[in-house]
Length: 180
Image 1 (tube, rainbow, N blue to C red):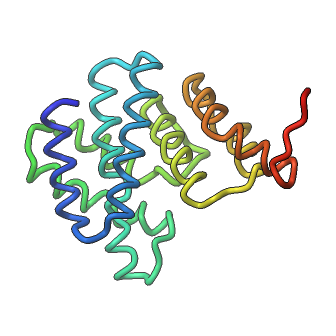
Image 2: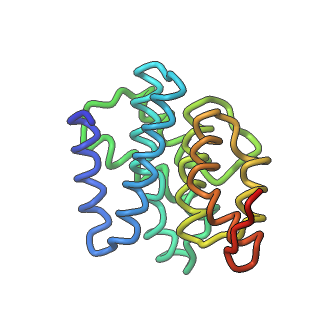
């Protein structure tokens, strides 16, 4: 990890102070996004934007809960970009073009039908990989995400490897393994 992203993690950890669930979530999403981006061969600029967006992707949650009484993804997309822009400008080291793209990704990370680039696709996949676990999704939901959301080879591999046992357990209603 480079210093810029380490400092951004420090900043968002302070921003989310006292909320370890959300902090752990963003750390997992960042790590998976970074892994998928590297394995998919992103150029350094796109990788940098992806990792920054992954760190800040849920920055709108607290404000959404305060304003709307909900952490719904659509509210996060409304409130997140301005909060992220403020943090990125305070942090420094980001061009306006980078800030604009990072804020765009944050403002769309729960919109799955308008994905316009590999950074966007990978951010969505990384968030799904974490949310499927944290939300204890069913084997059916995992399979649907694999068919409808995941596009990268690395993301699909991670999905299969992470959830193979959970899906198998769900499908066998009790985890009995057959010897097929």
